[in-house]
Length: 339
Image 1: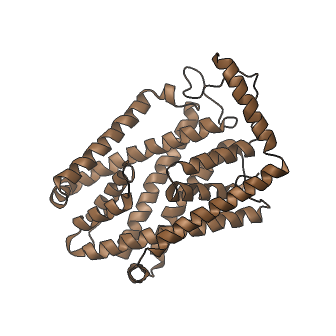
Image 2: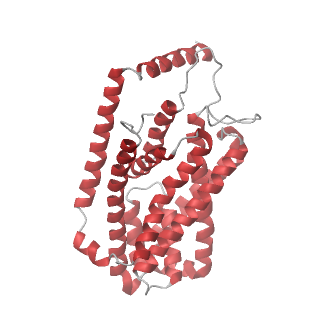
Image 3: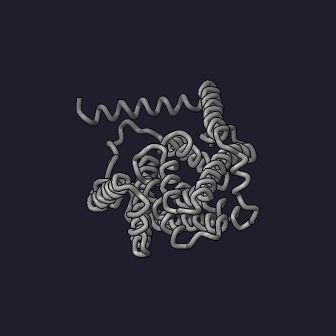
């Protein structure tokens, strides 16, 4: 069977599913799925929160309002940036911010890019995408020599390109900050604090990520689907988001423990960006262990602060998920994937 009949059959199935999605039975099923998903998310978060020693968390978190302002800013900046970028193409209102709050929580609490899958399903319904079996197969990957795909009519292309541009912005900003940190005697500190094997893993993993992203840039015409102007627009916003969120987070550390030198915080911030992009489990635990090894006499305070911020992030996940539901209710919605 050739590609066109296969595509036509797939589009027929997709259109039938979409048509069925507007029936009362599909609405009930969708509500049930949303409820089960909410229960799963809240259960995972509650279990993680229960493992935290709250006495230590309360002791180390400062009452300084500046700490809370910086920490909350670093948490909510990513979904706000995503809302700004996608609003340029999809023309939704403020209630859609609930979708990006859920996306933030799902990517952290479930598995990477689960939030992007959720966004893709929501966008397909929100934009009223029709699946025409007679249309020619769309270009799934890459814009080739053409102008690119319209993000307003192709949610898959928009979500895919945004995941890629976010990764490019993250690796670029990480490289810049890491080079600056190493120039501030960071290389000597790392060589002293970390064992050779851990250091080799960090260097090798980051080098592999760098090569992968350079490959994406070199073959961007075969990978990116949106027009270059739209990808550059998103890249600028993602770059600002990564750098500003990191600055806010590191600033919250400095406010919580003002006795630690700025150079130490800067190096820890750069290392955190490297570790968060490594394909390894328990990234927060790895970062906390490295942070403790780098801070000497202040290691106990640093360990407590990292544990406290990890616990606070879990609490914010719960608040964000509940807040998304409240936004949907205020907008007259029955769930995050309903229009």
